[in-house]
Length: 398
Image (cartoon, rainbow, N blue to C red; front, side, top):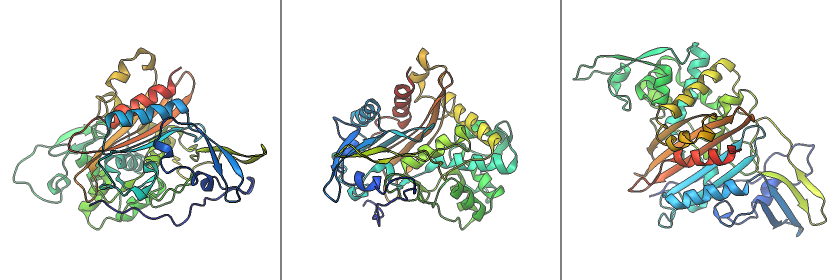
């Protein structure tokens, strides 16, 4: 059985007073339901307003990047797939596409959910370690070189690893740096952060500073990514390391979380509508830059976190996915970082797998954030990190 998606209560978004009274969400709602997954693709939409006026909606989507993303999702045909690429300088969405396998038929997520890129029904998994890491760096004054003890295997989470129970086996504690614990996604270290560094309420406050439990401002309706208040110390550990499927995330939100550390407190509000033109040529709506509600203020913590995200791509859990990318001479000077995550979908045995990250070209100053989520069937077809690396390469190619 699939899980239910929340039903839209409204398609309206707040329009600043300096813009004319034409809601971009209403115009996008008139497009075909499969607009973000069809080829051939055009970034310009012809539609008709409620009053019968013919409108032309100019989107921020890049035709080449959109084509590439759709093609990659179709080529590797997961059960579900979605990807978003954001220009971090402007907040413009350059690519946004979803995919459903022909055999899925709404069995994992109902088709009524709509655009998969905006659906907060995917478990955040280890992407939540980005949130926890920032909180530890900010609150505890730690650095990426700070060392922590770990007991047992790195990718498990048992009570004895957290000091909450005993094991019948004797494990010799080992030490690991914060950077390696993040890059290699070491659950016990991040589980202990949840118990030792935060109260349940502080953990929720930290998540809400990353826009969990808050509706994102966007040109289309995006329901809030969710996190629940932990009820026990073990749930605190599960939440802080992402080893719990009640913490959920949308691909758009994941891209913003991954991009926030390299722009510090200058993250722009994401948008997909550039302008709307009436049939008489009059410009009825245009976008002006606004800051996102998701802002990270601690520059030192952001710098350390960005370095740990780069380590994830260099030698951590995303290394294999970026192997071909790193071999290309033209991309060796790019600064790329990210985080991987994987967890079963709620009420389903289908595996949900993530990559969310950023990339910067120091020569041009161009910065992008990307998030790709795939839900696999019996066989894993490709990693989301590989699709993300191809998108990054295409977007920053000189």
